[in-house]
Length: 116
Image 1: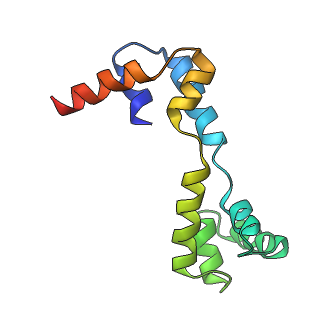
Image 2 (image 1 turned 90 degrees about the vertical axis):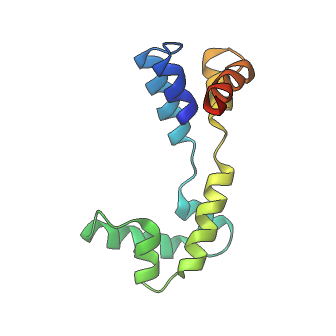
């Protein structure tokens, strides 16, 4: 995300393009419940129970709700969050797909500024 913010701040991406890239990237992050079902850690029925409980406490995150219901442990949630992040595409991939521009030279310029 910081990469896209850098491109926006340095006027290499306009407002609409930056927002579109960030929204697309966020939308491609798999839902933690889906990850848990695929890994066999929760059933679809469990996910529905968690989502129903969230309707009563809408600010409570999925993992916290699952722990409160006794369906997952804190360790399970941490593992699922790592897997969820692993499955999300790199933001540079989304940038390249949506802009048709190679990200590598821009990443090098950005990391060069960070090091300076």
